[in-house]
Length: 194
Image (cartoon, rainbow, N blue to C red; front, top):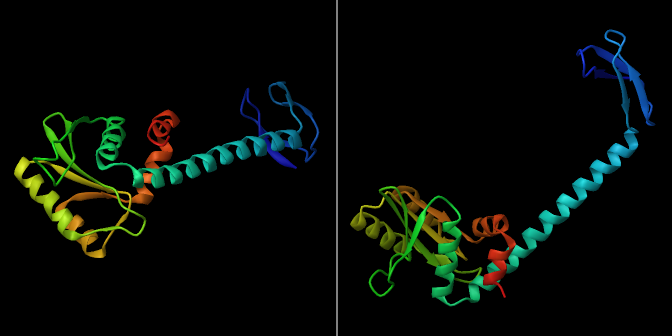
């Protein structure tokens, strides 16, 4: 036996452990309700869960493939993708002239607040060094930016991780970037991964 609550009056009733379709009548308010076979309901839920998992798995694989393709893009194209990635959020995105500023590629504006973004491509073994973050932190002070983001298709050294925490710089490595790519519209990713 299991308990079920009447959808009309809320009275708690016993429901037999019978897996076929069941017709119940509430003894308190005389509410009639037909319940589907529990085995069919379970199968439907398992089917929907399988589809959802399969779709999620495909998205994760596509994002992993995208990271590999982004590692091969020219720097300017990767920075353009990053601009599109941040344009999906609440920021107004402005690309920066790399001939003038080598410390960062994008300025994100939200009201009067500015956040600077550095975008670096690199292989899976590439690790961003502390000096790269120091350059970004210097630019943040110079421009009066409230924050900084360093995005890479590689990873960060332990020293750079510690410095980022001190300087208030958000770090996005290949794993975090992969998660963000998986949440993007498929058309946006396909545009860059042809």
